[in-house]
Every structure is written in C-alpha cells, then in structure tokens.
Image (tube, rainbow, N blue to C red; front, side):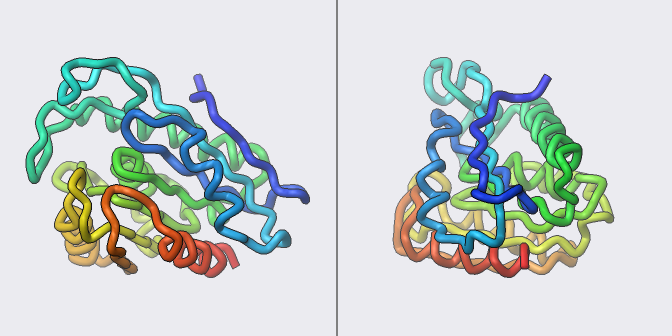
Length: 218
C-alpha cells in the first residue's frame, strides 16, 4: 500500500520527479511552499511528491504519537533509532519511486530528498535503489544506516548534495559532515554546503538547491 502523498504537478506533463520527505512531527505539507521558492524553469516540468509518514509513538518525545519515519530511542551523537522501522520506511519510499517509473518518469529523472529524519530515510532508499537515480539531497540530516547499509552498484555515481546549518541544535553539523566523510570514503561524489542557521531551511540554501536540481535534471 502506497503512503498518502501530496503531488504538485507542473503546468506541462511531468518529465522529472522530486520526492521530498519531511522531518519528525511534520507532514507532507511542510515543504510544499518550497516548490515556488525554488523558481525552477517551467520547461523542466518537475513533479513534486511529498509523502506523509505514519503516526507512531516516539520514545524521545515521551512516547507521544506523531508523524515519524522511525522511532528515535535515545538522543546522542550516534542517536539510537529503530533501524527496522527506518528500513521499512525506505521500502515505502522505494514503492513511490516505482510508481513514478510506472507513470512514465525514468529513474534517471527522479531525485530523492529529505529533511532531518526524512534525509536518513532518503540515504537508505537512494543508495540501495536498483536503478540509477538523478540525485540525492539531504538537508539537516544524518546517515543513520551507515554501518549496516549495503549499497546497490546502480547508484555508485549518484550525485549527492548535503546541506546543513552550522548552528543546528537538533542534528549537529558534525553529523552532516560525518555523512559526507562516510560517503566520500565509499567513492561517492558529494557536494556539501553549510549555512548560518539552526534546524531549518534558509533562502541561500533554497537557491543552492535550485541550481543543483537544474544541473542534475538538465
């Protein structure tokens, strides 16, 4: 069963797709305003897909039920998570990628993106996907499955863009830098940009993401 999603269609028939995963406690609406802020050329004809995570109890929030891609059981520099839930969420996103190919979008024209928790799921999904993708964008996130993942060689040349705030109190920038180091050590080509912000998205970051999307979807 597919996750519920918000789809934003371009004015002309879509020829590319960006699937963007929200963070903990948010929902698919969280990044809808970003579509307009990216100011992508109309001729790119990009469809944006914003999935909604299921509502589950989150241990670090006293078991409160909220939208989450997986449970976080302990906040630490290597925060403890429910890896099985993360992998299950990655499988749900894989099904959405498959749906896009069924709708006529080649995998090489699909970008996976995520913010915070959503970025951790995007790492797992993109790096294990069995067909080449257009790119992977991770914002204010971390590579949660770096010690257990088995990447698929189909995406060994995947363009990766990591963005992070230098004053992030939720996911310290060191975690974004660690992701870059891990991926570079595996042979991936990684672009990294930091911004003077907390756990958020800023205008300069959106402009950089726009330029990156126009390049990988050219």
